Image 1: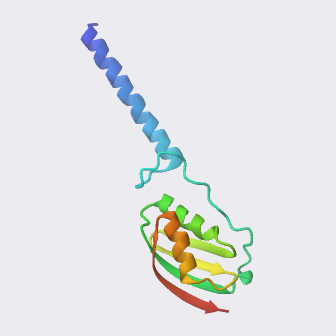
Image 2 (image 1 turned 90 degrees about the vertical axis):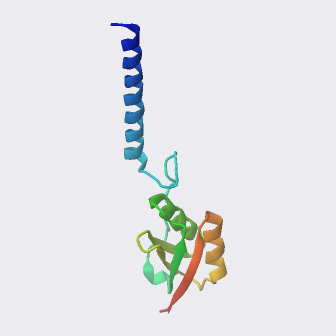
Image 3 (image 1 turned 90 degrees about the horizontal axis):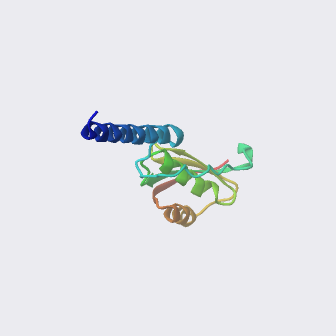
Length: 128
C-alpha cells in the first residue's frame, strides 16, 4: 500500500465518521430548518389540564414557524403565560389557546414577540 492510498483511506474513514455522526444527531434530535445544533428545548407542560377550568378560547395565527422546533418554542411561550394553555398546529401556522381569564392581544403579542414570532391575527372563541 502506498502512502497515497493510505491517505485516501484515512479521508474516506473520516468522511464516513462525520456522516454517521450527522445521521445519529438527526435521529436523536430531529432535523431543524432553524439550524438548531442542540437538543430541542424541553416542552413546557401546563399543570392544569382540566379544560373546564379554561372558559376563554382564542385562535392565533402566527408568522415565523417553520419546523417542529419553532412550534415547540411558540407552545412554550404560550404555556409560560399564567393561566394559559396553548396547542400549536405547525401545518396551520396557528395556535388554539385556552385561558382561565380573558387575555389581551398585547399579552399574546409580547409573549410571541419575545420568543421571536409574530402574532398575525387573534380570534376570540368567547367565554363559555
